[in-house]
Image 1 (cartoon, helix red, strand yellow):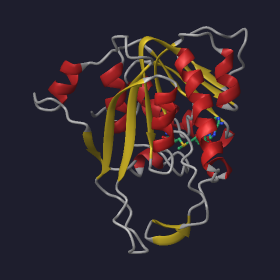
Image 2: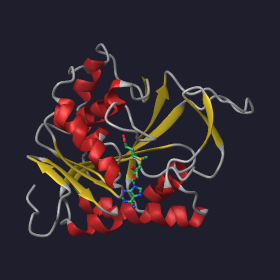
Image 3: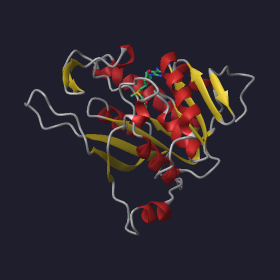
Amino acid sequence: MNFQNKISYYYEYADFKLILGDSLEMMKKFPSETFDMIFADPPYFLSSGGITCNSGRMVKVDKGEWDKSLSINEKHDFNKRWLSECKRLLKKGGTIWISGTYHNIYSIGMALEELEFKILNNIIWEKSNPSPNLSCRYFTHSTETILWAKRNKNEKHKFNYKLMKSLNNGKQMKDVWTFSTASKSEKKYGHHPTQKPLKLLERIIMAATDEGDLILDPFNGSGTTGIAASRLKRKYLGIDIEQSYLDITVNRLKDSFQMKFEI
Ligand SMILES: C[S@@+](CC[C@H](N)C(=O)[O-])C[C@H]1O[C@@H](n2cnc3c(N)ncnc32)[C@H](O)[C@@H]1O
């Protein structure tokens, strides 16, 4: 991974690199077919003044400026633009994983089809410890969807099937995965409103890459994808528009080798 001439990194240590900026612009700087895998957890577009439960308290849904609601068309246009860059950047046989809630995942699925990706799985992450629903007018929201796709239907994609089976006591792994949300110890480096649990990203990376592969996360956030990649000896490039989130990522990386390695 050597693009130093064209790109200015916010942080780099060996094969771990972070860029501060808008992904839509930054991804254009990389040559086609650069990455073995992409994980993306794009804005949910749900910060519209509703209420939610945080640590037992009723609070307004306000994850940040980057998460403000857009019209359906604006949201879909944004999704198509970043996904088409991802398609250009994926290597042959590479795959993309996109996580989201119902606020955005249907637009993502439609965009994947319009761009002629081939959807491989519709994985459900079941949260074992969801926040309660304070309004008592809905079922408790306790899932996120992760769409797994390859560039087009004709290519053979990488899938470490046997490893997944062995991690599931010798049985084929299903597409419903149960994990708790990010633990307190994973969150001690600073606050990010939508931090993913490390175990979720470790499973995704183990399923679709090998040691030494290069992974992109265009919506880096607190850097969960990067920390999992580094623990599993993969190369990583993360992009985020918010400097404070990249600082959390750097703190997590510096500390990550002291955490117990548990899969
Ligand atoms: C849902 S969060 C990702 C959380 C991440 N998966 C984690 O575990 O911490 C989305 C992130 O995308 C960033 N973001 C939003 N729009 C962006 C853009 N156009 N370019 C780069 N980053 C963006 C936000 O700052 C936010 O950190």
